[in-house]
Amino acid sequence: MKTLLDRIPTLIALLRRYPGLVALFGFCSGVASFLLVDRQAHLAKVLGVVLLVSWVWLILENLLRERIARRFGFELPLPLLRYGTQMIHQESLFFVLPFFFITTTWNSGQLLFSGLLALAALASITDPIYYRWLAPRRWLLLILHSLALFAVMLTALPIIFHLSTPQSYRIALLVATLLALPSLPGLIGFTGWRRIVLLAALPLAMAGAGWMARAWVPPATLWLTEVAISDRFDGEQRTPGESLQQISPEQLRDDGLYAYTSINAPRGLNERIYHVWQHNGREVDRIALDINGGRKEGYRAWTHKLNFPASPEGRWQVRVVTEAGQMIGVLRFDVVAHTAK
Image 1 (cartoon, one colour):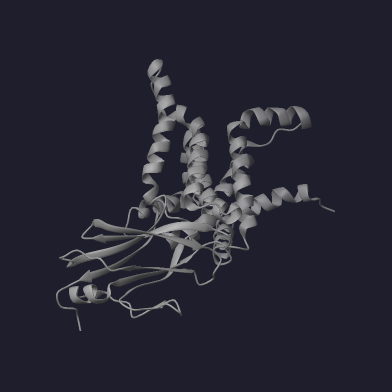
Image 2: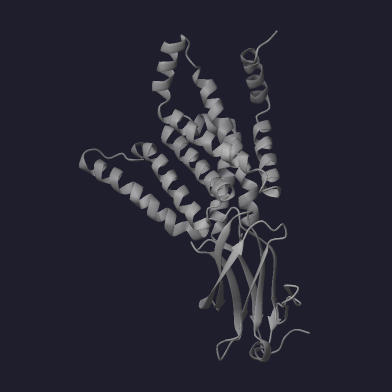
């Protein structure tokens, strides 16, 4: 009777014959976790732990292979290890893609980060790219690993530990920066003191750039389920009136405007967000709101703006952002002298 170890080569051969199976499983598990965000926290936790352990393996690969060979008398095949790493990347990247795709504001800089994740996921399932271009360049493979871990942590930390989006971003950025350190020597061609200076400065530059670019990174576990701009609001039912695309200056002065957002968040998460009112690209008001996760339809939050400029005509936006400045979504409307009938 075959043991589990005897079946491993057969399983590996099957996965190599159908490489899309791992990616498909990762994507399906990501969709399931997205739909059941409170019930699938354990899967995100497992992925995060596996990525951390596999990163340690990547760094100490040669040493660990030698120790295993001495201790157990056999050497782990390098192709097998490379394939195991590839499966981790596939599962991780396709797991987080549904979260980031639904939370991305596509007509903003967030397109760059989500597009980078998508390209990394495609590279992980394309063997000619992964094995001929990524795997031979160890520094590039470690960067891909750090990106996958960064995305998984942004998704997992709010779900598992109920950390706020700013807290999760800081921790994920710190860990990703530390894990990227072993890849830096491969990026630097200088020698001598210039190499030392660059090796010391690059981590600080990476962390600083990552923090400055946080507005381009979608908040993986926060997304809008319903939005409206209206001049009416039912306080008892917590529902807005008809959503407006255009409004006259007279209506603004008479009733003001309500910006209504229903935001889905994981159960147990307490988050402060802001409605940032902008007129022709210039911020005119920033109103804080505290939301709580767990409601299936999303936490209902609204702001009522009464004070408008003397000449309010033009394009308006209400940007919904986290304390860290990550954008959850945008509501748009125009103030015109004569509203459309």
